[in-house]
Image 1 (cartoon, rainbow over the protein chains, first blue to last red):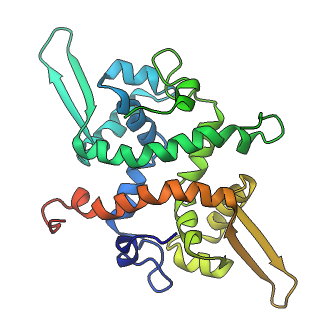
Image 2: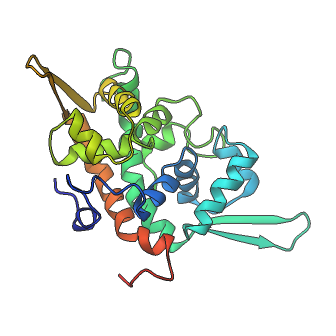
Image 3: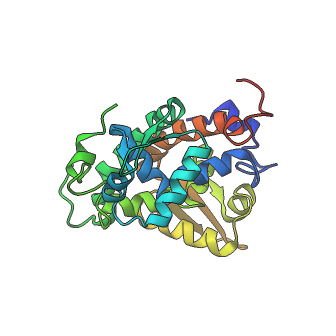
Length: 129
Length: 129
């Protein structure tokens, strides 16, 4: 399998290393694959969610980390935030078109990991696929 | 886009959250998308590399982090380590079949990120695609 021209252009190879340390690709990669970023993206793949719903489905995330993760994903243009002037206040989060483009590439990886994780972590107890 | 049956089985939805916090999928996800794990996997996609070559192409990785990352990827069965009894000692690292299965799912995501990162991070200066 060959890596794409784009990765090569960015310095894949022995001279410049895999993705130069300060390139934009590494920054976006860090955002997308951050501990919580990927789970928030997966959560929003299915449907628009409110703040409290995200807190519940992304198990273990703190208020602070959810706020920070959403802010980063919004700044990158992956997530759209919509606040309604209702009482009590309601804020919806959904994927943008760019976010959908990204998750289309992310989900096959997630599916593969989900389908193989048990055997990888517990090879002796996992039932054969 | 629907998430796979496997993700649903593991608790995607409002009851159990996205991937229960202690499930194997999250553990493998953490390994694969760790700051350095993904770059080491990409590096090995093209060819077998020696320790020193990995150090050079994965820019910015420390000796300690490279050792730790390779140990985790080897324990998960993604990377094969082969030591030759030569002087000076030589150790080669390559992807296993499982590692190749994984990177086949990982590379489309990496390619998408590489192709869009500049516009995401620097929307005003990036040239149109």
